[in-house]
Image (cartoon, rainbow, N blue to C red; front, side):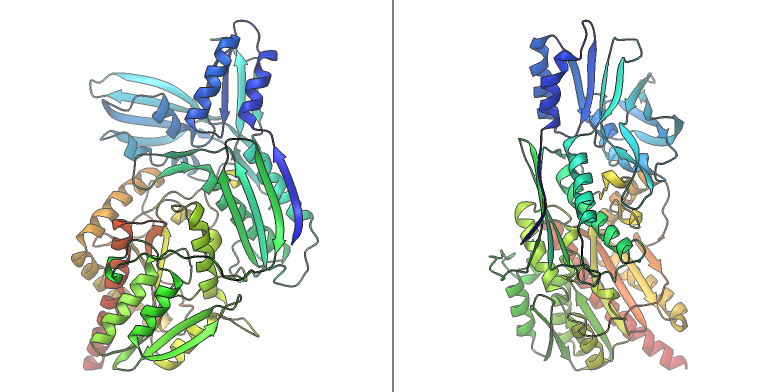
Amino acid sequence: MTSLFDRTYPRTLAAMVRDLPARVEPGETVEFWCFEDEAARREAEAALKPRGISARIRSAYKPLVHAFLEELPRDGLAAVRVAMPVVAEAVEGRFALEAYPLSALVGGASLAFEPGAAGLDHVVTLVGTDGRESRHTVFAPNVVRPDHTGARILSPSGWLRIGRSGERPRIDEAVACEIETLFLDVMAAIAAYPFAATEPQFERLVIEAAIPAIRRPLGYGDEVADTVEALHEELYFSLLEFFARRSGRKDGARDLRPGQIVPLIRASDGPASVSVRLEAFTADDFVYVDAGGPLDQAQAPLAPARIAAALAALGGEVFAAHSREGRKVAGAFFDGEAPAVAISGGQHANEATGVVGALRAAAALKAVGRRFSVTPLENPDGYALFHRLRRDNPTHMHHAARYTALGDDLGHRFDATGEVFELEARRESFRRSGARLHINLHGYPSHEWTRPFTGYVPRLFALWAVPKGFFLVVRHEEAWSAFARTFIERLARRVAAELPEMVALNARQMAAYRAHVGRIPFDVIAGIPCQIGGATRATAAVELITEYPDETIGGPAFRLGHECQFRTAVAGAEIFAAMLDEASATA
C-alpha cells in the first residue's frame, strides 16, 4: 500500500457555533448555509440561542428544495413560479435541475421556471388556491472557481451572512465547508503524485472519506438528498477526467485505463477525514448476499455464484474468458432456429436488472429452440466492487463499479491490442452465434445524479441526470437504418402492451423530467423513450440497448426492472426474426 494523502478536517458547523459569538454584534442576526442535515442545523441554532444569537442555518445543497421542505408552504397551492438565478458560469439548465423533484413536492400545483435577475437569488411566487400571491427569495450559495480541467464553474458552497434586519448584511461571504475542502485537497494530492506514464497506473486507487452529511429522503420515488453519494460521484468522475487529460484524451474517454478507482464514502457525526492510497488487488473473500428465491421473483442483485449456477443449469456450449482480476467471464451458445441473437448483461456492473433479465431471456429462448448466445455478467470485477459498495450504501448509484478493474468501459475496448480480458467473451459470443442482433441490457440511475463541485449537472451525462423511465436505444449499421426504425417501433408497442406498470412508471418519471428539463429530447413511442441511430460498437448489424432506471433499486421495483429486461429481450429476438422473414418473403 502507498499512502498519497491523509487529513482530518474540523466540522464546519461546530466551528461556526464556537466562533460566531466573537463575530456577531448586538442586535444582529445570522444566516448560515452548510452541508448538513436539518437535525444538526436545528441543534446548532438551539446551541447559539442561549448565547444571545438568533441564527437561521440552511442547506447549501439543493437550497430551493430544502426551502420548500423546511420553510415555504406546500399545501393549498395552485401555482409555483420560480425566477431562477442567472450566472454566466452556470451550466445550462443547472438551477431547474437542482430544484428536482420540486414538481412532485408541490402536490397538484403547476410549476414554472424562468430566468430571473443576475445573481444567486431564486425569486419564488406562490399562488394559492384562493388566488392570493406571495413572493419569497431563496438564496443559492455558490462560488465561481476553476476546476481540475481548467474550466470556470459554479459550485455550491457554504455561506455566512451577519447583519441587522432590513439592512445590507455587514458580513456576506462564502465559507468553504469541510466537504468542499476535502474534495479539492484530494484532487490536488492526486494531481501532485508522480504516476507512471503507462496504463494502468495502479491496481486500485482508494479514497476513503467520512463527512458530516445530508441524507434526506425527499418523499418522491427513490429521491434522497445525499451528499455522501454526491461526493462518491464527484470524486469518481473528476478523477476519470483528470486521468483522461493526463493521457491526452478528451473528457469522457471510455478507453481510459488508469486502474480501478474506489471512493469509499460514509457519513460522520464528527470531523471529516480522508485517506488516499494505492492498493493491490486482494483475494475475493467477500461474503455475497444473494436475492434468494426463484429467478423471476428476484428483488435484489444476484450473487456471482447464483449467476454462475443459473447459467450452468441452462446447458449449451460453454465458453469463457477471464477478467483483469482473474475472475471468470462465462457465456454459453445454444444452437437452434436462425436468426441468431447475442444477449449480454452486466457490461456496466452497477446495472443489475440486466443480469437477471439476460438469464431469464436465455431460458425462454432455449425453450422455443432459438439460436443464441448469452453472457449474463460481462464485468465480474466491477460487479464484485458493486456488492462491496452496496454493503455500506445499498441505494446509491455506485458508478465506481460501472467500469472494469482496468478503469475502462468494456464496450469501448474494441480497438484494444494485446490481452483483452473480458472482451474475449463477447467476441466468442459473436463468433459462435453469428448474431446480427446484439441485445445489450443496461440500466441508469433510479434517482437524481449530481456532481455538485463541478457544475452540479453530470458532464456528458446530462440526459441521464434524472430518471425518465425505461428507455430503448437502437444503434445500427448504415444499411439497416429503415429496418431499425420499424424494429424499435414494433418493439416499443409490444413491450408497452405487455407491461402497463412500466408505462405508468414512465409517465410519472417523464412528467417530472419535463418539468425540470423543459423538453423531451428523444422520441416517445407507446410511452417509452427511444433513441435511434449511431453505429453499433458490436459486430452485429443492429444493437438493441435497454436502459432501465435501476441504480440502485430493490424489492418490487427491482422485480419490475428485470421483468422489463426479460420481456424486451425475448420480444426483440422474436420481432427481429419476423422482420427478417418478411424481408426475405418480399425480396
